[in-house]
Image (cartoon, helix red, strand yellow):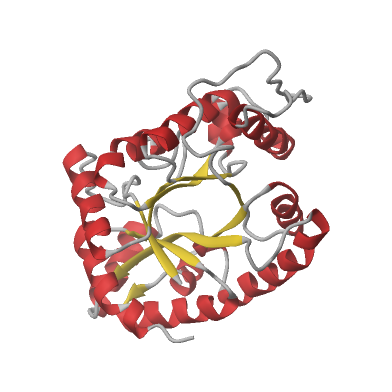
Length: 310
């Protein structure tokens, strides 16, 4: 199991949103040996949320050799052509280190603010993936769909990676989402606060059955688990405070669900959860500390991976 670090873009209380804060966090992740650095995406949210692609681009110089990933970016909200331009630039500036995970978006507010219908998000996402591939591959035929067209559009400069970054699809594990992933993606991105090890294992097994239908090999198909918010502490009072005052008011899930799915408490709790996910087939986990971010990355790296059992 590999580990990536989410940039702390979301305000769980006290996030300073400075370049120095993000740079120190990224430097820590690179020094410790995290394999990837990721950002996700909202335009508007219930708490302040720093723009993901901008933050990722700003951290290229600090990211060392880490893979850069969007987990996820929103081509429907941002527009697939502008997003293709942005991600191509990040891939070029990072010498081809980008993974472009995309999703439809789960917030109706994001759709309202850009004047799009929430009900169209899945059809638009399907077309958006075609747009990204058409623009990133110089030999590709133009894509013409119901919502988007790349006819007459030339993206220049192109990504550093030939053919563009691999495109992963974010899905919480629905059958429709897994079919879309098998059909259109180079990898699957699941959500830590929307699944359990058992649910992930069942979805992964189903996806592995679907992949050969689309000419893809389950043995080489990638997966990862994103938005693994965490806080390591042996103090039950502190753990309860972090859950009640930071996480529960921010994440739109019942508190009992969040307590079950997110590791807030001793490092042993986190190791047990990741051990279960590893046995279920998870290849990479993107962790996201909700406070004291750089120090929590250190705690995680030094205490959790050594205790994982498979």
